[in-house]
Length: 158
Image (cartoon, rainbow, N blue to C red; front, side):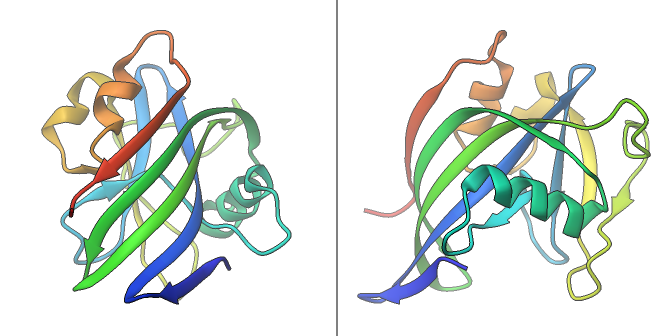
């Protein structure tokens, strides 16, 4: 995975899935996290970011997905567990199959990776500002109808 420690910071490249369905977006969080994020993961060396999405959705949910267009590129600077992070993120529109078992908006889903107990939930796009969704540019950008391509720089530290 593209994740290295340089000059006291962790630098990583991440790909994230924007899964929209019936006015909702699918997000996840790990146990103990106070924030929600879009599903995805770190890009492997030599792997296209769109392929990362397909791989991660299979690993995390057991879902075959179709990775669509690139919607956002984000430069994200944040602290996590006392560690400064510099992340380059690629955010893609992603479609679940109409027959997916993960389309019920009232359910909470558990990820299938044994080493990571991810909780997945659907939230109405209109209510994203009320949850702690990271990076923080996402609630406003996901509320845009139709979605518009953007380059975001999100800085939580100077």
